[in-house]
Length: 308
Image 1 (cartoon, rainbow, N blue to C red):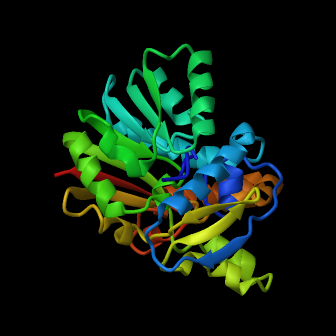
Image 2: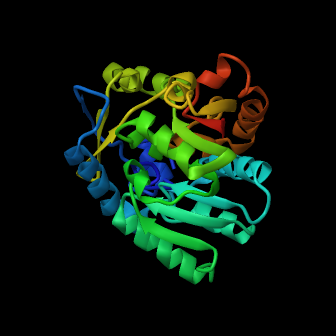
């Protein structure tokens, strides 16, 4: 899942409507947001709920709405960041690889990638993609949730996760400990995480009188989100709230907003009506998205950390 304890992978973009578009749900309907759970930690039943949800959509994960222009824009930012942080032939770990789009990109550039996902169906899609691209010598695909990192050996130069898998893990502190073990000294973490404050989403639902839906990201506990008649359990974060779980083992290098001025991927129809105007908003994203206060907002945020 790209997202998952997670959601599985490459999994594109938020576990509400963004998740549908980013990860390939092509019907355009809004998933149902359910009740918050009593605690932020997810139990085994909730992890299995999330796994089944992503298994159920793996076939069309890369559908026309699931890999749209705004998703591609966000994806390129993570790609550029990874390319800037690692030399060729680095050993990388992909958490929540989804259908393997990111793993293929980095393998083509000479990196060796271990691609993992909690959804078995996503893993099968990734394996098929790797075979089709003749990259089996550079990519190893494993059915593994982010909460199971203790099963992996160490020696990685970097770990990345795209489009929110980190929002679906049971215990961020435990993940931080495992990431520190898996990485070589000075290794990097590069995560794209669903943020707590998305102005576009807030305004979109508030203007329609759906105030409860508008405030769903404010929940301080794990929230159940319906998708394809299944449930995804997710937790939203501010960047420094997220970093708090990693601070003992990692120093923060930078973070920036993703889809702050430009609409989030589930509102891609706005972009398609006036692409030139929204490209101007993308210009603002690129130049202002790292500024204090502004970088704490947006559909997602990109955070880069270095192992101490």
